[in-house]
Image (cartoon, rainbow, N blue to C red; front, side):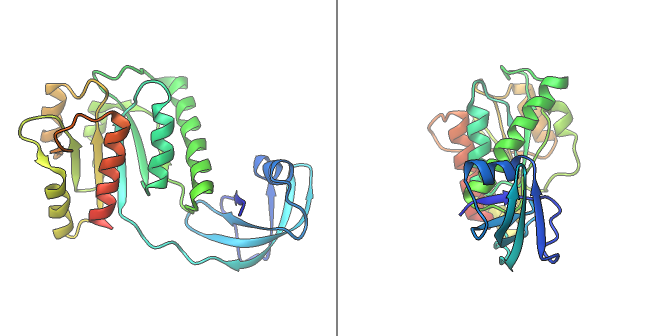
Length: 244
């Protein structure tokens, strides 16, 4: 079933008006017509099944038929990762949404190949937010994960607004097994975590030391050296399994 995004939707109003790109895609690409049924979600967790009443140009009016039940709560996972090269970030963002990540923080580390700042950083963040929206439509997620603009690693480590359970996926001899760290967090009733993942060339020794000083636990993902995107998917899936 086609899904339309309507921020700040008032589902108690009975009739909603969808305009712009969302209406154009529904009417011109999906070819919805009066009488057809689709879903509308507000990006903040609510959704409704609606029936198309009329559509003209880039405007579509729909009648709310029923509110849909909220999705079961999932673990609050903040994914902080060094921006990988190529199109890997697009894939990571898409799959992270499908896996239930609540926030994505792109980082610029010492060995990050892709360097972003100013307008370039803002443009990339907007592109990733569009990827988030499309993924939410595709997989039925009603809450849009937040995507922040790329930021320096040192500034990220100074933040105080992140979950207490801080996991750094690490390739160091003293790294603890991921399972042990997550199970300890679950035993302590933690239902949120930060997953910190480095670039293709890994974190530098100084960056590892800085992260530990900031409260991040170096955590191993097993004996196999993983690509960045594979490490992300493994870590997020493990966190969902342990903390949900």
